[in-house]
Structures are given as structure tokens and as C-alpha cells.
Length: 404
Image: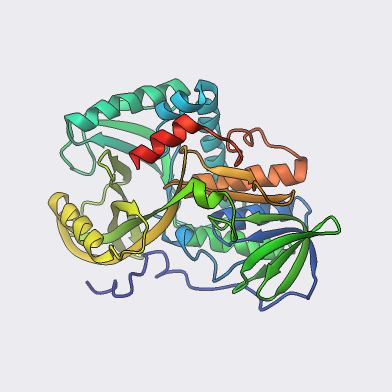
């Protein structure tokens, strides 16, 4: 291994430039404070700034630090929570609305890429789901039927492009992949060019209400605003999101193959935890980028064993010449499988959260930005009820806890 000593992701090896200014004027006032410069925060700040709002984006470290910079950046119309489960727990209309939301979020990403001429290795890829044994195939049939009910094109195919022996394979057309940090870097640049303020190494630690204004407390001083978006996974302080989300860690390797066979496809098996695959070109080199071995995050260091298991699994199915990069990432799974996007329960009015994306952060982070920017600028969103953070779904939550 020649480049993985510090567990660097393949994305960070290419993009290292920062744009944050050092500080802001004490007591500065804005329409919106956005905390967190990942895909949710940067997209939210840009959409709101373009709508004429004065926004400040603050980041505790640097752009894309954490999940947005460590994702494998699959852009899917299907989710870690399958549609049949959404139909069961939330109803068919809600499941169809979720599919509509996924499609809209994908279009937002494509539109931003075209509008700002972002060269971020975006490409359309067909997705392939495959069952590895008869037990997985039982779950597989329910997934297929759920996709069909909500209008996600799904059809059986004879071949698995990743060459992994499978009892059944389905193709889901028009999925996509891209380079997350190349994409976010240009969105951030556009936000700043549009008059937005961006400050790094500035963490929002709490918020209070004073004279009908929100006062965000940061390590660099207070910021006064009308609205605050926590685009930070779990908001700081004591709040219900700590109890309604579970942290997981996933592991990724970027490998060079001896046979030079890098499928132009996205792949997913149905193991528990499942594995996911794509290819990526870095300059003239090609890599297979594969992840899995997800587990609940705790105080025990599982890093070595998890990477060892993932590496052994990949060697069973791929002709690996070298593991060039490896890294891990943390994500949050909600209690009932759908994210929480909207007013943060127990906080002052106009304080918003966006969390519980599971492994679907690129689509759901973009969707959250759309929802929150619509709520703040227009007063509502067609999707807000589905993702309301104050919702309670006891049956769905119990099933999700058992499955975890």
C-alpha cells in the first residue's frame, strides 16, 4: 500500500484548497446562519443566498470535513430503507413522494453542475442490486415490488457487471456518481461570489432567543440572525435528535486491479451489512471503490478488524493488485428510516436540523437544502411533513431498532 498510511480518502488526495475567511464582525446580523459546510450546508447557503437572503456559512473545521468528504458519492433514486418498508410504515403516497423527492434532488445536482460548469467527474451509471444467496433473494423480491409500486424502473438482468456470483440481479437505470469535494468546492465558491460569508474553524455551540432574533454562540463571537440551520448531523446541546439517531461507521477501499476491469456501474449486494461498489478515475489511473462492514459507532476501535474483513472480502471477488486508499466515515441512521429535516423540536422557532440520512447523504443532503430553503424563503415545502423531525412512528422505529 503506497498511499493509505493516514487513511486518506481518494477525494481529499485531489482537493485541498480552502476558502474560509478568518472572522466576522462582532454582533454581525444575517438572515440565515448555516452551521456546517458539507453538502447540506453549502447547498442550503447557496440556494438561500441566490434567493436574496444574507447568509453566513460557518464550519467547525474545513469544507467537506467528515461525511461529505468521505462518502463514496453514489447518487441514487433508491435508499438504504427500501420502498416496500416505506410503503408499510408510511403509506404508498408517502413512498411515492419520497421517490419524487429523490428525482428532484438528482436534478438539482445536475442543474448545479450545468449552471456553474462544475467538472466533478459526474457521470450517469446504471445501478445493480444483487442477491448472493436464497435468503437474500427473499428480501430482494420485496425490494423489486416496492420499487415498481413507486415508479422506480427496475428490471432483472442476466449479468452482474462486477462479476460477483449472484442468484439474482436487477438493473436500476439512470443512477449517477461524482467527485463530492470537486462539486462542493465550486458551490462554495459560487456562494462566496454571490455575497455570502464563509468562516472556517468556527463552531456554533448553542443558540438563544433575544428580542425576536436568534443569537448563535460561536467560538469566534455571537451571530444574530432570523434563522439557523444545523447542517451538522446532530445539533449541539441536549436535544431529541441525540436519542432518535444512531451513529454508524462504514469503511471504504480504493483498489487497483490486475485485470484492468473497472465496471462503469454502481453495485450493491444484500448482505448485512451490505457492500457497495463503483469505479473512479484519478488522472490516468483507474480504481474500484468499494465499501461496507458498517457497524454501530461506539467507544471501541474496530478500524483494523473492519478493514481486514473488507479487504478479505474484496480479494475473494476482485483481482486486486494494490489497495491504494482506505478510509472510514460516520453516518447517522434515524429511528424510523427516514431523515429528520425541518424545525428542531425543543428549540426556538426558526432553528432547523437535517440529519438521519443513513448512507444516502448526497441525495438527502441536497433534498434537505431544497426543503429548508423553501421553508425559510416561501414558508413551506411539499416534502416537509414527510420528514418532520417531531414525527413519531412507534412501529417503524421499533422495527428499525430490531434490524439494527
